[in-house]
Length: 194
Image (cartoon, rainbow, N blue to C red; front, top):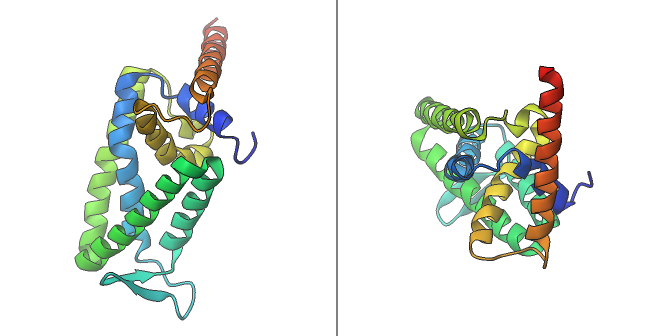
């Protein structure tokens, strides 16, 4: 799979998320996982001595939170310039507001808020997979790809509700690939039960 092959990434992730209820659950709970992770990353050490900057009254630290934000942003732009730019903007917005929230809460309260939000978000997603999708999450087959692709997948799902396509024919092509991957998975599942 090419690093910036949007169709293959989307088809891989989409084959684990074809049930509308599961997609809705992910749409609600994926971005909060990213956001709350950035809240915790706020408390990691700065990467450089000049790593603290001020932005609109918020103290931003160039630390692991910034690094992860930058990786996600560049990856999304590499996948699709238009939707990726929106995804990158959302990532940086999450980083700024997560930093502000973390600074305001302090570590002793922030980790409790993050833990509660992560438990609710992950539980909802596992329920979505177990009850509605009836398939294990993508992260069990490709952890890095699933974590990187999840926020962009739900962003694209929402944009496609408004008839956005990264290029003409994208939706039709990925739907065919998703269908093929689901059929392949179902065949493998049948073989294992015999």
